[in-house]
Image 1 (cartoon, rainbow, N blue to C red):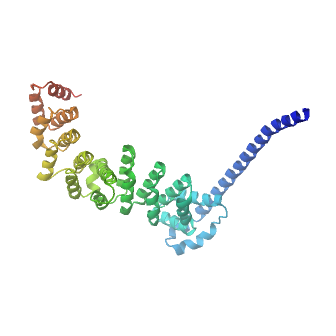
Image 2 (spheres, rainbow, N blue to C red; image 1 turned 30 degrees about the vertical axis):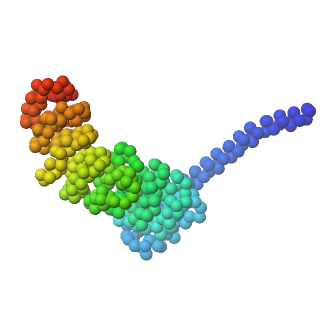
Image 3 (cartoon, rainbow, N blue to C red; image 1 turned 90 degrees about the vertical axis):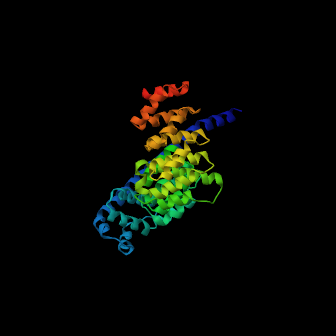
Length: 367
């Protein structure tokens, strides 16, 4: 019995010591690996620096091919180091050098490696590969990035959206919008800025999405809603990147939709694009009579933002609407219409309706 106890005691002592030894061994291996990675980074940075003048002159795969012999990689860590250094250098390089760096990256087989990772890697690896292909603005990766943009992971979808907008080709717009149909408002706003940063005419891809008739109705409506929200988020810059006439015509069609979401967002998009024709103005004014209060509320605000003085009488009536938001927006819209609107507000102070008087008083007092 005593021998058995001694044996158990020895095991209990050895197990923690053995575990500690394994932890220390693992940490030692990790420290050495990090040191080797740092050495690899510095070596490849130095090589790129030595080749900087040559890279400035290299503009074709034939020019790049001799340079690839300078970069030898036999391990995954070395491949990772080359990728990191090229992407890092690309971020601060002038445009001619960027083209040469992208050619070097491809000639080294790193593009093919990243595409393979996108297909078979884990989530973190796929995110990094997606980022690199976007950073290099590698248009042939469009199909792969489009597939990634449909991934169930929100993080991976957002990286794909960034990569697609970084490529800055109009063919990237559709997959970006479709991916954004699952996004929240903040993400949508950030993507709107990215799309504008592409400096491209966005009319054709966005209008095609608004005219789309395929797919399930719920999904189609989400996509169309996303397009209208993007136009709204573009704000004053909307007319720079979307043909205003085409945009307004699409929004007018959607004002006839059965969907409250689409009608409200069509009004907001019209506000961003501006209105010019009598048909467009009448459509906004008719929305003030919509059966759904959400649409009436947005229409009231639009009349004030667009300075549609023909809406004075409609706004005067809307200040007595049963819905608080309609009353509130209508009164604010009247205030935005200047002296004529304030005259109407002062008249409404004599209304028999208590809610009307309270709403007008709040607006005139600036609350």
